[in-house]
Length: 288
Image (cartoon, rainbow, N blue to C red; front, side, top):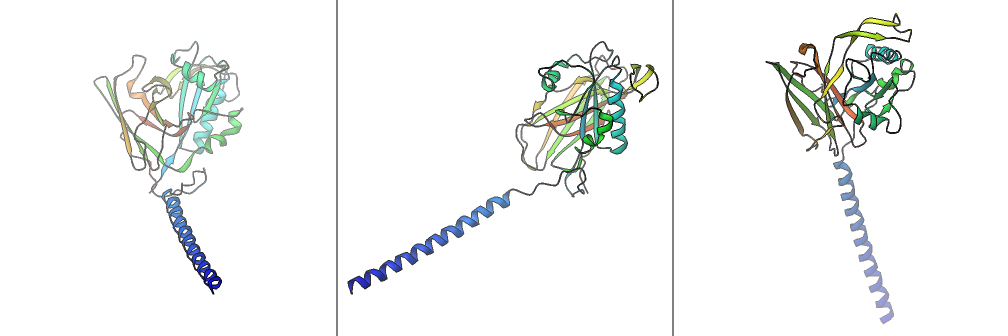
């Protein structure tokens, strides 16, 4: 009789144990599911994805290391023109180097970033700062276009005024996701500069083009050229940075000033970029 009671008690305790284990499993599953729900689905950021309401347009940055003396640099200039014929979502910066009236003296940090163990033998071009644009660039315009998108979670907008020889600029960056280790780069550029350009290609006429129009010429980096740290990059936040400087002495025509602002990650790749002209008031490029 005692033996039978022991068996019954053992069965009872085993059933209780199974119930507790089941309750623990259900509770764990519930909280596990809750945790995964917190992380929202990211939008499709491929170049061909349809626009999702509420997300930002994603532009591609092309940094063109160039020179008026560089006859092969017209190849990249022509490739940029071809990209712009296919998409509006592109921002270009011409970074001149060498014996050139538009030489940018602060080029060293960029050169050391993109080519740390090699000389800067022009032409050189980079997409979103760190991606090598495959030679010949004219045949690989799709590489640039593939880095654009209808949907991203970082948006930029700029507002600027020119008054009494002084430039006031505000750059707003808005986030639809949580980010860390981001930096903001802001360039001041000049357009419509007329100067000769050597040409060793068939993309333009003549060995020496006397009145070549040089646009998006980098004049001043208003931040550290590798970027200033951005604080407060959480979902729903908008971070603003303001600048106030006199018109740089190397600017030929202040009315031809434009700006490029872009956000880079810890890998120094541009996440999104925006261009703005002087005296322009922008809103975020949000999908309706």
